[in-house]
Each structure stands twice: as C-alpha cells, then as structure tokens.
Length: 460
Ligand SMILES: C[S@@+](CC[C@H](N)C(=O)[O-])C[C@H]1O[C@@H](n2cnc3c(N)ncnc32)[C@H](O)[C@@H]1O
Image 1 (spheres, protein in one colour):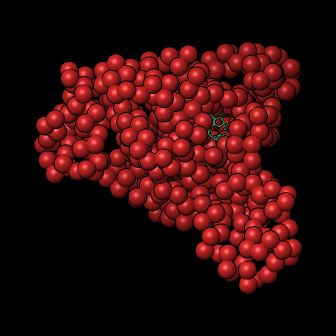
Image 2: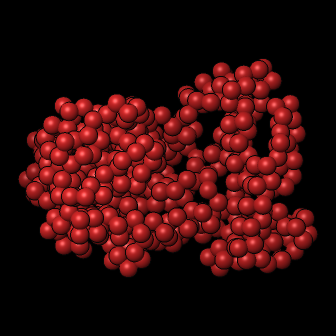
C-alpha cells in the first residue's frame, strides 16, 4: 500500500468527483458517498490497512498509523512468502519440518539431506531444491549428525533463490533492506561460507552479489516462529518487513501454527504515529540492545528509550555508584560514558559492563536454598536498582531454580517473582504484549505454576 498523493486526496476513488468521507478502516481512501465506497470495496479491500508507508533517508521505509488505533487493534495478518529452517538448527525434515530425533530417518537418495521419509523426499518442493543440493558432489553442505548445525542456513537462501521464477515474490525480495554491501565487506564467516557454497560448490550461476543480497535480506528481515512440533522456522513477510524498530515498541507480533503473523497494537496509537516492534529483547540492557542492532541490522537506535539517559526514568540499565553509594550511573555520549547522578563520577561503558558481569556471576554462583530465596532477592535488590535488568535476570534464575518445586512455600515465592516480572515488563514493554498476556499470566498467578512458557508459538 502506497502513500496517497495530495491530488488523490479529496477525490472519490471510484468516480474522481469531490470526496466527502473516508474509509473508516484505513482512513486513507476517499469517497463521494456510501454507494461508491461499497462499489469500490472489492478493489479497495486488498489494500485496506490502517497504516501507510513513509520513508526517511536515515531509517528507510517504515509504517505509520493512518487512524487512531486503540490498544489490541489487529492491524495486519500476514503469511510468509517463503519459509525455512533457522540458520542453526538440529536435524529436521526439509519437507514437513518435523524434528528428526532418533536415528530412524532416511536420507534423500540424490542430495543426501536428512528427511523423515522417502515420501517427503519425493515432494515437489524438495525435488526442486534437490536439483541444486545434488550439485554439491562432495556433500560438504549436508548435516551428518544430530545436534545443532549451521548448515541449515543454506536452505532458506536456496528457497529464496528459487523464487527467481516468481516475478512477484522475486521483486519483493529484491526490495528488502539487506545491507549486502556492508555484509560483503565485513565478511562474517557464516555469511561468506554460505555465499561461497552456492557460487563455488554448487556453481548455480547466480552472481555472488545476488546471494549476498538474499542472505542479507534474510538476516535483516526474517522472523522466527515456532511450529506445533516445537521446531522454530524463519520466514520472510512482505509488509511486516517494513516495520522499523524501537526498544519501546507499540505493537506486538504473534504467530499461529501455520506461521501466519498477527500484528496488534499493544497501547493506544494515535493517527500519524509510527508503528514499531522491538527487534531485540526489551529486557536486555541498553549496551546489549545497541550492540545487536548495530551488528545485525546496521543502525544505531535513537528510540525514545535509548535517547533518554535514564531510559525514561526507569534506570533499567543503571548500576549503583560505588563511590558515593547514593547515586545511579546514567549514560552520556551515545552510551560510551556513564555518570553518577549524585556525585558526578564518570566511568566508561567497559567498566559498567564489567561490574554488571561481576554481579551476574555473583548471582549465578550463589548457592541458594529454596528457603532463602526471598532473602537472596532482597540482597540482590540492595546491589542494583530495583527493577533493573540484573534484578530481572535474578528473577528468571529463581523461576528456573524453583521450576520443579511445587511446595506451598515455593509456589508462593514463584507468585511473588512473577508479580515482579510483570512489573518490570510493564515498564519496558507496556500494554497488551504477548509476554504480559493478561489471561495467561492470570492463570499462572492463580495456579502458582511458573514453569509454563507464556510465549506459545512466537520465538523471536
Ligand atoms: C526489517 S527492515 C525495516 C524496513 C526498512 N526500513 C526498509 O526500508 O526496508 C530493518 C532495517 O530498517 C532500518 N531500521 C529499522 N529500524 C530503524 C531505526 N529505529 N532507526 C534506523 N534504522 C532503522 C535498518 O536499516 C534495519 O536494518
């Protein structure tokens, strides 16, 4: 869906006469009256979304709401145009994607890739892929044993290259942001190995720039979703790929068992506001988020949270100042310098990271007994600001520690831990988010069972 030009505004999309109303669903289609709106609906419904695409030099294309959207509004439902295994995966069947757990699997007689059955090896999709994979004469790309292997990276790249015969999808793929030039220069070993596999081992006749672009587009845009069998796959989505990032998102993504993604607003969004989701865990400290965004997505985040020295008064990544024991370190100069907000002592990011790691190690190495969990939490809260990322990590550690302990006392502690987790999530990702799914969390709190995973399908 493209921006509507000023000339189109105020004229009926059906007859071109002066418009007096807009489509209530998207807010950007204009009509002279109800009659022509109804007549135009079969055409318009294919483009009727409550957002428009905008563009800036620094952040490329992004989506902006075209009308007021209350929290929880479904703004888009989209299926992937290509789907495949994650880059690193344990053995799965290339046709039905079920996990190959025992040694009871077959190998495709031509390409030797593990499959669940001969029937799956004969499926038309695999037959197409097999023609290329069989060009690997020494079978150096074939995964040969159980356990996680990065060789599955090749499969989604191959599936994308095979889209060349489909002009519509090929064009979408070519238009995706990929940062392929920088990726080619950076020569990250997995990236280079994947490109060379197709150009030098299979010699499939694509220019190496095309393969750099395709792998770059996958790394920049693919979204992981979980299958009912528990296998995580990654897919490319044409419209969802246009969503930009913020560490303080206003939408959430969920997938169903067919990997269809549902995008909903998590908070009230006003007409004209950009729609953002978070590419990285919102519960990571600022330096982890910034590092991942730079390394994987090639940009420096200037979102509302990253531009605020205290992360919008949450002090989520801050540590207590050891010098005065009264203040908190907040970041300055693009997070490279941290300053105590009481005594103004300055330290470098490296020092903050070291102190954080020491604290995390202290937490991890501490021998806690189920009886002393609450005291332990109190100790941690004295070492870092309450509700910061270290406290959050400790809460998760305690949940894992008490996972199989269902005594009344332990369930009581788990309930308190979950309440604190929800408080932290309310700060860093407010609204109706998947992690704070109200019904699910209510169930967890009432049953006292904290070992259920609230992220049912989605696995970012
Ligand atoms: C999934 S794409 C999003 C759509 C993209 N803007 C486009 O034009 O195709 C991810 C890329 O968008 C850009 N991007 C996303 N969020 C951004 C942000 N908050 N600031 C700057 N660039 C951003 C980065 O180049 C990133 O690698």
